[in-house]
Image 1: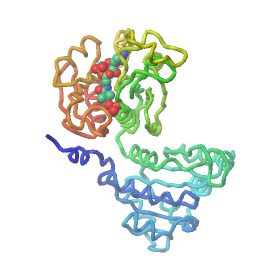
Image 2: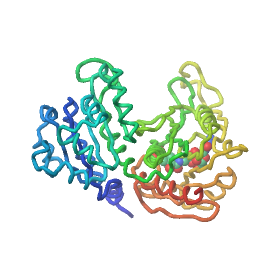
Image 3: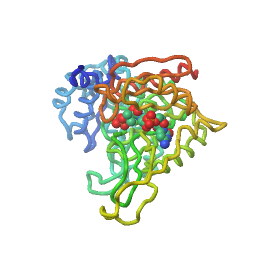
Image 4: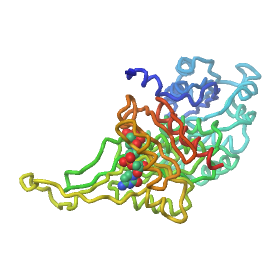
Length: 405
Ligand code: PMT
């Protein structure tokens, strides 16, 4: 039997392995989050070198970021006269987080008066900015003009988020969540092989209600579908994620449509696939049955002897039967090694590809961060072995691209 520690070891995909990240930290209250950002970038394999503005030093010390990055922190152009040229020359990606209104104004206008702004001008690779400031500052037309100008040079923006800001006001201006900044950095250095394609992904369970407090559902956590949505976005696709109830946060850049029942998922999938989708990937565990009657008030248990169930409509079969349809990828959750059943399911529902998921395997199926599947299409099959769900997601997208390029 394979141990669960082996499964855990496989969980982290080092998407920034051997990548050198040049991180610019500017003087906003969110600067303290730079230490966490560094840790998470290193966690996915990156080496990180930090440049700080004078104002950033008011919020976090260079020493803290030196400890976090295990690298020299650069705070002045004169620390070493050629650093502003040599640092960018070695970087695979530059990220500025937090990026204040001041630095965005300077970069948009070519002003180079400190280590960060001079290194930016000397850098020719991908750049990600994570703006963070007071909501009124963010909305100011002059700032918006500067931001628009900067983005017109192909720079990626992540955030800001809306909510309560450090100053106590409500508004848009909070630094993007650190994992979302990491995803944007990953996307900036990942080949955009899905660019120009719209991918619709389903995830999670559906709930079929008996009354306002009881429902029929299943163990799906949504992790598999969310990993697929995130991987597709990182690779440049426009992604719509249609999810049943889960505890997961939507991956950055993905449009999330939350649904509850199989009927709602059918409606959302139909609407999205009608609108020029290239691919539909159904990782959701859609309920096959729903109660024949749904009570408006809580049914007394003494009044329930048995349940009458109706079949839900098969969403994937419905889409695959359309004349103008996307490339259709389904999953087959099975208990036991019945690969043949998955093949039959693919043919019966007219899918183009199916992912056979034996949910009885250790570390596979519901709720875990890992999975172990066989990807089948009309031409053959490929076993993935035990991998993180992020890696399984990439394997599915790779196989799709092999067929559809
Ligand atoms: O969410 P996680 O915790 O990460 O778990 C992942 C998973 C185990 C849910 C996932 O990997 C998986 O196997 N999903 C498919 C589950 C399932 O419903 O399998 P199925 O064999 O019953 O259905 C076959 C296909 O038809 C599936 O693509 C399903 O989405 C689709 N279907 C099913 C019923 C229905 N009414 N409409 C559908 O479209």
